[in-house]
Image (cartoon, helix red, strand yellow):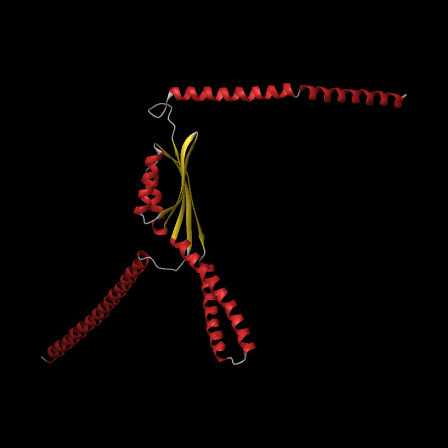
Amino acid sequence: MKNYSFILLVALVLLLLSCSGESEVSSPEMAIMMDSAQVSSRSSGGASRMQAEILIPQDSGSKIQVNGSLSLEVDDIDKASKMVRILVLSHEGRISNSDTGSFEQRYANITLLVPSSNFYQIIDDIKKLSVLVSNENIYSNDVTEEYIDTEARLSVMKDTENRFSTLLQDTKNIDEAIKVEKELMRIRGEIDSLQGRMNYFVKTTENSVLNLRMVESMPLTGDQWDAKKSISDSLRNLVSFSKHVADFLIGVLIFSPVIGVLGALSYFVYRLANRFMRRQRR
């Protein structure tokens, strides 16, 4: 009976030890799972922040001048010019120069000044008015470094101006006051120059210039082509050419005596030179 009791006791102790071992094994597994969950949560949060930084544009404070030129062919130069003026107003811009005329083809040269934020959009809108885009050129210039340098110089000059203004108030000698005033005027002149340069950078980076050239297409057939006009133009050119030829022949006829005299003198001099050379050889 004692043996049975001892065996049962040993079996109970082994059972308790095995349960304790399983609980110790399961506990680290749960800890590892929790740690991995925390790591994955942190990594997913970091990824979302990176995506947000990529999607949200960062203001780098750069100063870039963007300008361009565009050449088009249009069906009607008047309608196209009118639509360009409407587009410029809708994009908060203005026309700084305009030139229209006709030389073989009707044309219009227009200089547009638009905000840089609307520059590419107005180019796309203007190209929709054309039947052919002959040339498109966009060029940029980064003036960020020069802008920052000018801004720093301007700040230093303003501080210097303040110090000289204070010094001018404290001077008691007239000669010293004149010298300080002269230097102060020079500093203020440099400040005005630097401020003008800063304003130029701001204006040219916030606005873009587009040089637009439009020419009217010339179809071989259609309402815009007139056979009578073409024949009359050809006859007019033929008459003009005939007049030039006649003017040339009349000029030759009038100056023929002078040309004959010069030719005779040249021939006489040539003969004398030949005779002289022959005598020298003998």
